[in-house]
Image (cartoon, rainbow, N blue to C red; front, side, top):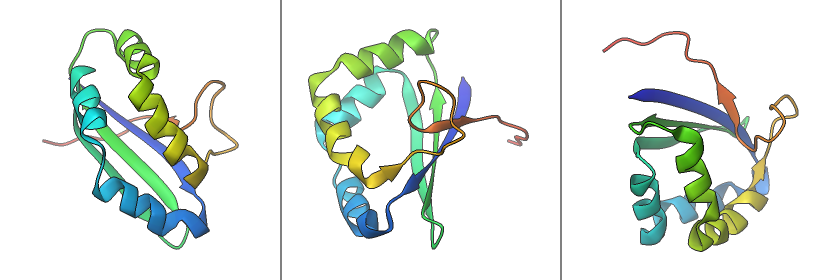
Length: 109
């Protein structure tokens, strides 16, 4: 199992919309997340900075393949089309990233 964290900004005028969307995530999206070996997925919001922190645990053997499977799913792409206008990617993210992936520097069970 691999713990993964990521961060992105959130448009101040989209905070309530983003909360509303994630209070009722489409069932197809939740199923695809599970199918792609992602568990224990949470998104946290820090206001007033409007930073989103995402965390999940990846239980598969090939994250790149599972990420590609998710990205190829039409319903997932539709969900992203709804959510992405709410988000503000960090200028310092790596090429090809939307959410900026983070390095784990501490863990305790």
